[in-house]
Image 1 (cartoon, helix red, strand yellow):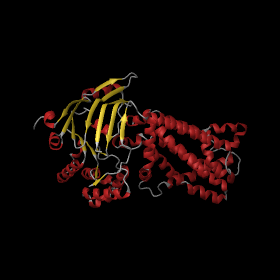
Image 2 (spheres, chains in turn blue, purple):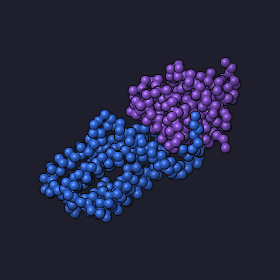
Image 3 (cartoon, one colour):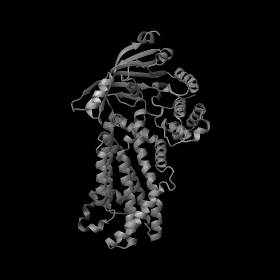
Image 4 (cartoon, one colour):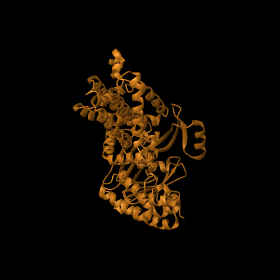
Amino acid sequence: MKKVEQLSYSSLVISADRPRHVERALGDLRDGFRAWRLAFALARLDLRNRYRGSVLGPFWFTLSSAFMVGGLGLLYSQLFKVSLADYLPHLAVSLIVWQMIAGLINDAVACMTSVEGVIRQVRLPYTVHALRCTIRNILTALHQVPLIVILFLILGHNPGWAGFLAIIGIVILCLNGFALSIFFGMICARFRDIGPIVGNILQLAFFLTPIMWKPNMLGDIQVWLPLNPFYALLETLRGPLVEGGGAWLAWAAAVFFTAVNCTVAFAFFARFRSRIAFWV
Amino acid sequence: MGAQIVSRGVAVAFPLYHAPARSLKKRLLAKAGIRVRTDESNRVVVQALHDLSFEINQGERVALVGQNGAGKTTLLRVLAGIYEPVAGSLRVDGEVGSLIDPGAGMDPDSTGRENIRLRALYLGLDDTTAAELEAEASEFSGLGEFLDVPIRGYSAGMAVRLAFAMATSMQPAILLMDEWFLAGDADFMTKAEERLAQLVQASEIMVIATHNMDVVRRWCTRVIRLEAGKIVGDGVPGDIIGDA
């Protein structure tokens, strides 16, 4: 029999009088990221199990996006009287990024409650669960990349050098996804009504965010758009891929919202981390 | 430095968030000796553990005894670092291995072998140790070709074998154990007992929650009796549970 020598997670010292909230939350994050291989393996299993026995697997998602982009593209380019070649790249990128954002948030809501069995039986950094949720959604979104590539090739749309800025956009998106997984995962474990509320807000946000429509269709009031965090996030990817960089105000807003999001999530995590096991 | 557990005034209370207060209250009051109260914000709170102070040193084999609902499993989970105490302080030195729920973290759609690899990741093992765990657990489980079948297709007995093999393939310094291991077919039980005994012997500290006084007499050097979340007895087995 093999002896466990390495101390996988920080040793256990708890004092209710001196809770050391911040220090232990940082420890959780550090241990959790160190266990990224576990989070990755679990995320892959989630995907595999979700599409078990299906021939196309996650590519069903790609196929449905393709039909959606095609159908909506034809209809709305007529409604808005814009050329299809102009409208399709916008719609495709917006829709796919939106699907990733919405998927992340919808998953984040159940991020802790769906693994209550594990939380209550095994001592693991909570970071692992949030990381699993984020990685799962990134993997799902990766299946959509071929769709964008094929569409750009057909339309002869070349994002140029600005396209590389999308890498920063992806990092920003993942960072937000992780922070939201922590925050919503916790708060939805405690207050079970928040999940449905979040779902409703997302539905509304889909129409309020320039996904089907373009920002310039708003005319003068489009200066207010950066107040919409979804727009800001969307723009960090759509800007580089479709519009040759994107508005600097949108980038600034994205960085601002990310900072706020991470700060709030960390504060909440530090304060209430020790309660998660009782909440789920 | 050897393994050690030091607990000073540890208390755990469960707020019952998502349950209809009245009916659950009645049910719990009827079943358990634990005190159920309603706190200032009108939530139902189960006071699971009260002001527990004890010290467990290297070489001790401790049995937690008491009625259902006395707080044995909760205390195990506190020691495992799952539930954090709301009062008092706790220090656990040494790698903890918990045999609390054998099935925790198993994925029903993965094969036995994949589950063993997953467990290695849960434990945070490096590749060489993970390979050793895999060899060890697959050999002991005796599942043979079934190791490459998704465990959804396992019989209850086979699932127990696999869970047991995985859980007992690593030797922790501090072994926390709940009573689940008394399941499985007779042939396997003999093998299982041997292996558990080995694990217990080699651990520096063992804490087991059990109703089985035979197990206590055979393995333990110390008994802590819990009642309604409090320690009501602590000493050598003969004094606490009497002679057979």
